[in-house]
Every structure is written in structure tokens, then in C-alpha cells.
Image 1 (cartoon, helix red, strand yellow):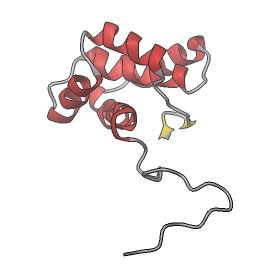
Image 2 (cartoon, helix red, strand yellow):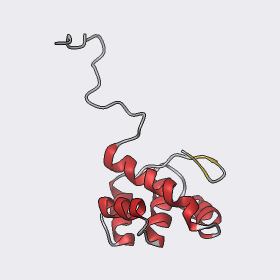
Image 3 (cartoon, helix red, strand yellow):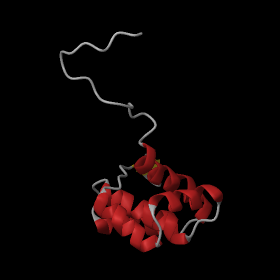
Length: 113
């Protein structure tokens, strides 16, 4: 995702998702709903982005540095949409991600009805 100073990979695998739940005292659907409704907490934004960067492969110290510069030192509303996109990707997948099973190599698809 394009965010802050460039293109960054965000992901919330189980370890980061569990830490996010602890840090925000809420599950991913509650966090998503708070971000969407405007009833978010500071940790919903900050921790989602920080842990998403770490889950995406960034070193924790680098994720901390980026979040300090582009979350803590910026207007909070700038980061509501990016944080919501990260948590939504966990819940429903990326927008450009194909839905359903992938086809095995060499197999034909089912004919249309």
C-alpha cells in the first residue's frame, strides 16, 4: 500500500493480530467498526499500522520510526483510512485478491451452466 514515505507491505498474521487485540482491547471486527464509524481510539490507528508493517516484514524498530513520523507526528485523521484498509484486508482480503480456490495447473475450469 502507498503510505507515508512510499510503498509498504502490510500484513497481520496471527502473532501480530493477537498483539493488536491486546493493545486495542478489541477484536478485529470491533477495531474495523470503530475506524469506520469514527469512534476509533488512538491505538486502533497506531497499533494497526505499526503491527501491520511488522507483519509485512519490516523490522520493528523501522516500523516504530515510521509510525512515529507518520502517525504520532501527523494529524490523526490522515491515518484512519490506511489503518482501516489494513484491518479490512485481514477480514475480507485484499481488493485485488481473487476469491475462491485457485485452479490447479493443467486442469480445466468447470463449464458454465
